[in-house]
Length: 171
Ligand SMILES: [Zn+2]
Image 1 (cartoon, rainbow, N blue to C red):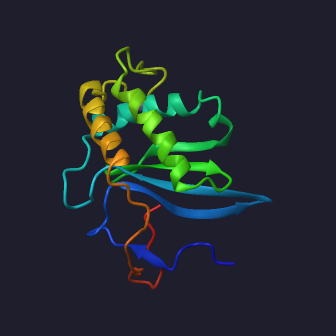
Image 2: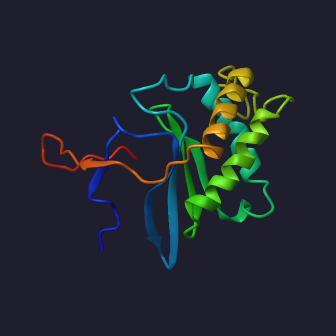
């Protein structure tokens, strides 16, 4: 069974929000990849690398310590395009559940006033690439967006192919 959507996300019409990027079956288990989209791609500036790197550290630390959800978190990390993050979870949580979790996680970033966790040469691959004030600014805007104009339906376009006929994927 082909579990990958046959369409490609239309990145010219994509709004900040939370989307189901894909769902997979691994053994007997279902896992869901969420697109935690913070900015409108190609319409707004992407996040600065240092800001999204700091968000990666603080949000990953929050999620993996959350008493309710920590056992469901498989992966959290930034997208290469710097407009959002991928969150891979066990099972099939709803966008609404993840919305509430992300409001908590990003509010934690907004209120964070200590040293960013893991910013030493032994714990991070680029420990000088951090910017807590910009991370907090981006997190505050995203929390407001999640509370106000929440989007969870992808705009789709036909999936392109490369020169050899392979279908294009970005993750
Ligand atoms: Zn790091």
